[in-house]
Image 1 (cartoon, helix red, strand yellow):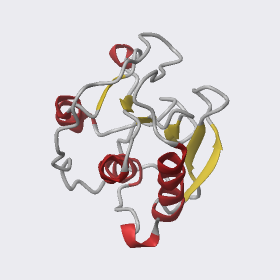
Image 2: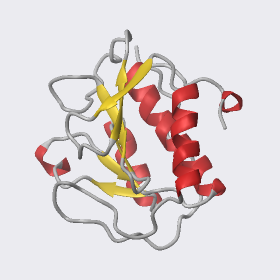
Image 3: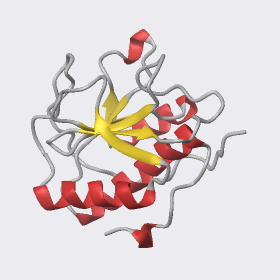
Length: 165
């Protein structure tokens, strides 16, 4: 049975960035500074055990994707692409992410102002966009949301945040 801890409470984010309405689904404004994006990637590498980085099967070639590595997806988890490769998240060069989230968490996530539906969401694709974190406080929020995606994908909690930086 998959770990279900509930979607984390999130602070208000503020104005939403401008994003594209089609695939590839990109964020055009309010992007991550390089050091924040790099810190997110380092944290994901340290905290999200049982994963491996690779080229996304569904996103732009410049994206970095996380795949489950030697870990079966949690029972009932629908990852990206829906019929395949155990990709559950990818990070774009702008710092935004596409994540698979528990469908029961979608409403809380979307109402939080931290992201939006993927353009193919209405076609049954379980993917949401997490807006790019712009500073340390937003990076901390991105870690919480990414942790929820990891827990949904694997059925387990990520390693402690103290392992990252």
